[in-house]
Amino acid sequence: MTTPNRPGEFALIERFFKPLSRTTPFVRQGIGDDCAVLSPAADEELVLSVDTLVEGMHFPRHYAPAKLAVRSLAVCISDLAAAGAHPEAFTLALTAPELSESWLAEFSRVLAAEAERYGVSLVGGDTTRGPLTVSVQAIGCVPKGCALTRRAAQSGDDVYITGTTGDAAAGLAILQGNVKLENDLMADYLLQRFNKPQPRVQFGQALVGLANSVIDVSDGLLADLSHITRQSQVAAEIQLDAVPFSEALRSLPNQADALHYALAGGEDFELCFTAPAGLAPDIHKLAQRLAVPCTRIGSIVAGEGVRCIDAAGQEVLVENKGYDHFPQ
Ligand code: ADP
Ligand code: MG
Image (tube, rainbow, N blue to C red):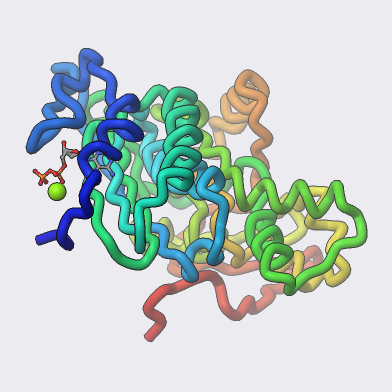
């Protein structure tokens, strides 16, 4: 059951969301009926993921609708990237205290641009009244049997990370006034990394056939890597001095904060993956071809858990490995 419709709800959907609904070979029917009808190619399978962003929890109050549109689609598309899928469509459940036309106009304008960039059609959704919450379900396709998972890392694999981690967490800390940077360029970079995540969609697809396991970094590098180790029943050893830092993260006044963000800060939407050591040259070539920085940060070994090793070869215990909405 949904909350009572506001007058004009249907007109607003028609005006702001229907234009994002395109018919494609995959989308047989989009917005406007009870259900969307989707038709994957005979040799592919569907890949779905849903992500919810709640005001005050995942984004601050009075967050610009344009930024919310970018983030809400990106976080979900990133899951498709981690599965090696190509994005095709999405649905949108929007809950808001009121439907302001100017807010909707800005939100849908940017959502349309982002949807175009990813090549996804908005195929349906729901609009309800309540605290501001955006829930996006991303829908993609992958050749049958080829979806990348968290559960196939093998002892002897190398562990890699694309780009850098910790930037988005530092950006959020700046946004919240918890961290101050003198250098505006560096601060802007970190803010951008929070506001405009760039899911590694092409890279994820290219990892099919190379990577044994993949996860996108949403909760924090160590926390997400520990999902791979647990589900693959292996352990990981991370060389702390190999973990890449952006120049902006290095410029934080407190380097202990920087390391904490890089290891445990979430929301970077980089891909952490494992691949057989023998494929290192292929990974290197792929990174160059797609111009995606990719760094080897450790190895998969027998055992369980994620261990961090310092430059002297000593294990370093890292507390608070990442974000958990319902800690026990
Ligand atoms: P129903 O009552 O049958 O669930 P709704 O009245 O909620 O349908 O929605 C009418 C149509 O508009 C449906 O096709 C639905 O998918 C679409 N829709 C509703 N809200 C949104 C939204 N926020 N974004 C995209 N499509 C939406
Ligand atoms: Mg409905």
